[in-house]
Image 1 (cartoon, rainbow, N blue to C red):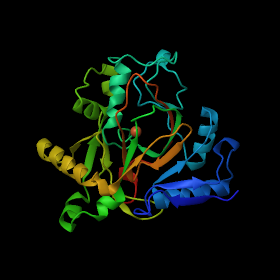
Image 2: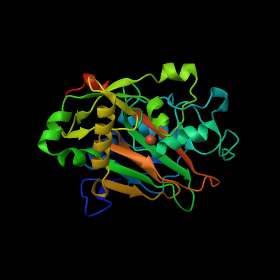
Image 3: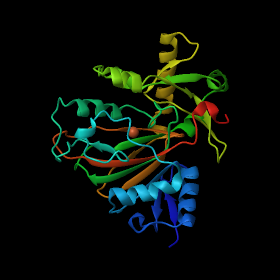
Image 4: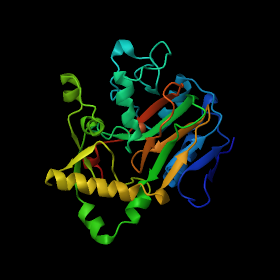
Length: 295
Ligand SMILES: [Fe+2]
């Protein structure tokens, strides 16, 4: 089976590709996985339609791209979890498959996914790829938007690039959730999600391209006064999420979308919270903390 990848939008030939000729459920060869990784280098986001997979098949496919993360960024208690620890539960369901109540703590925490972010940027070693499988989607709303942080970097003026170049940010889920007024963290969660340092500008290890590493989890810049840091990050985010850098994915059931967190931000969009939205995410970890990577 030969892999073919085509740009989803002719206006952006290097951002968001659709993959043809891959059946994830049947398992893929090393050669196919390599072709997909080449596609990730070019497009940063890949869409696979009609992939009727279960969690085991999704996990097996994900493992081709590096070591796997566990879902330690969730707030569900172990006994509340619907899915295994190796799968992030990006749904509005409890473990019995019922839609979460409007004021459920897990739902309110999950609303943070509607802020622009890069997955696991609050972990010392953040995520490389995320793979999100749509098991059930609402008829309307709930799109995922992606913003190209390579293009956003390229479009910055030279003075701003120089100012950003060596900055280190502090990322924490306590910050991103706090932006929405979600602050009732337990002591254990506060310890677990203490801020971690991340470079603001990253170099892709295979393509050599630079990109902005932004995320709503970023709440401080080392050595900068807080208001100045937060305003600067806000300005950069506004720049980086202009429509010219953004693609919206309209989900169909059994889509699998895979993105490179090193070079894209994403966010979920609103949908009717009484309707089921059941998404399963597997996550490939990056190779090292960003401060240990070549810049
Ligand atoms: Fe996410």
